[in-house]
Structure formats: structure tokens, C-alpha cells
Image (tube, rainbow, N blue to C red; front, side, top):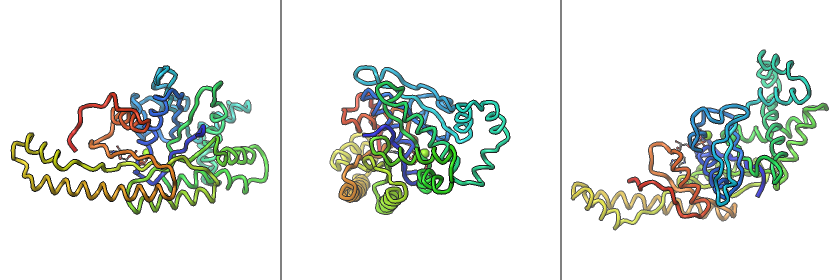
Length: 319
Ligand SMILES: Nc1ncnc2c1ncn2[C@@H]1O[C@H](COP(=O)(O)OP(=O)(O)OP(=O)(O)O)[C@@H](O)[C@H]1O
Ligand SMILES: [Mg+2]
């Protein structure tokens, strides 16, 4: 739908996971995907199948090539910080040496506490530059950004408009205006909201959506409802309990567990319907029964998103 997808949502709803899943699904469809994180400690690299150190630098690391039906799909991960974006920008203005000294002196921290939003604008300015390099003749087809948690995601995306009204002139003002134009152009940028299938997270997601629509003017990609509990087949569960535990698991307990799951999944279905009524397009991702998500889980979820039958799924684990 657009060249840039900013993945946003409340803390802990699965933004990083969804970023990895959407990146993998897009690359498996043949797209050259650039994943941008603002924080190198999110575990995104491992979720994408890389090593912990991959993608932690400004230039980043290519984690996959040769994906997709024609082998055109790829995934590149990079970490963009405000001070490196500033250094990069000054270098393009022929001020590389000054930039090094400014950054080493910590001036970015000082400036951004004096003018809140300037660090966000610097990062978005770099992302805008990268969006300009997407397309058939460019390096990437799609850029995915793992945005900061909701509260900060709003101020992050509001920063260009705020800067454009505060700053009277100069390169920062034109930067702010150009970034704002990119954010409001649905062919270039959309926000992908992630939420959980429960009432309060959905209400908060709808509030954030409204706030972003009004204060930034962004368009939206389909909403991802993550961590959905799928209904269990009670009879199969009881049968499995009888055959594997040889009667050591009481059928009553299994039935109660199954009933609990059935109630939860019914509640989740109702919540998803509600999201569907309000924001048309919904992508659901199931809850994966694991202590910690890994690359294999991401590949399975990516296949689900693409509507492909999971090929590389590992043996089913008990939930
Ligand atoms: N579909 C899922 N099934 C099972 N576990 C999941 C699923 N999605 C996310 N998780 C787990 O939930 C936790 C939070 O996910 P994640 O880190 O992606 O959220 P986040 O929104 O990026 O969090 P933060 O706001 O801290 O950046 C992680 O432990 C992740 O493995
Ligand atoms: Mg995260």
C-alpha cells in the first residue's frame, strides 16, 4: 500500500514481533525490505533470523537475501539514532569533521532537551531520505519502522508539524515540512497499529488512531490484532489428554481448561469483530504457545499473514 509502514501501539502489544512478521511476510513475497529500529536492544535481529549484533549499527546488516518465489526478497536491518542522523546530515553538507566533534561533545542531547522533538525530527528526516530511495530503481521496496511505544509514537510522529510551526526558517524548518508531507501522503507512509484482542487495549488503540489522524494527518494500514487465542477442539483435547497422560490428567480438569479457552477465544472473536466494524481491515495473529518467540515462530506467523500454508513450522508444541 505504501513505501513506509510505521508499526505503532501500546507498550508490550507486540510491535517488535509484528515488525519482524510483516518484514518476513513481505520478503517472502519477493520484496526488498528495510527494517528500521530506533533502539538496537529490542531483539529484532534474532526474530528476523540474524545474530544479536546484526543491524545494531547505523548502516546495518543484510540478514537475508534470495527470499520469495523469484529470490528477489531480502531483509536489511539498521538502527537509526538521532546523533548519527545528525552526523550523517552534516556530512552531506560538507561538515563531517564538525559533526564528529559535535556528536562527541554530546551536543545533540543538550539541543534535544532544549528543543524537544528535534531528535525525533532528525530520525524521521533520515527515514524520509531512505523513503526517497525506495522503488524499482532504488535499494528497497518497503521500509518498516518499529516505532517507540504509543505515548512516544504520537510525539514522535507529531514532531515535524510541531517543529514546522516553532521554527521560523532554515534547513530544519524545510526538513520538518518535507517530513510532514511524507507522513500525510498515503502512497508513501501509513501507520500500522498493533493491539491485543481485549477491550481496554482496543479502546486505547482507537484513541491513539484518532489522535494520530487528527494531530498528524497520517493514513493507516490494516490493524494487527496480536496474540489471539484460537478455539480448541474440546474432544480432541480430552482425547489427547487420555492418550498421552494415560489417565493421569483428569478429564474434568481438561474440560475446564478447554471451556476457559473457548470462552477466551469467543471474547477475542467479538473484540476482533468490533475492530473490524471500526477500521475495516484487520489482520489477526494467533498467540504462539512458547516461553519466548524466536525466528521459527516469526516464519510461521509470516506464512499465516501471507495466507500460505506454513511450510517450515516445527512440531506442534502443547499449549
Ligand atoms: N503472537 C504472539 N504469541 C506469543 N507471544 C507473543 C506474541 N506476540 C508477542 N509476543 C511476546 O510478547 C512480548 C512482547 O512482544 P514485543 O516485544 O513484540 O512487544 P512490543 O510492543 O514491541 O513491546 P515494547 O513496547 O516493549 O517495545 C514478547 O515476549 C513477545 O515474544
Ligand atoms: Mg518493541
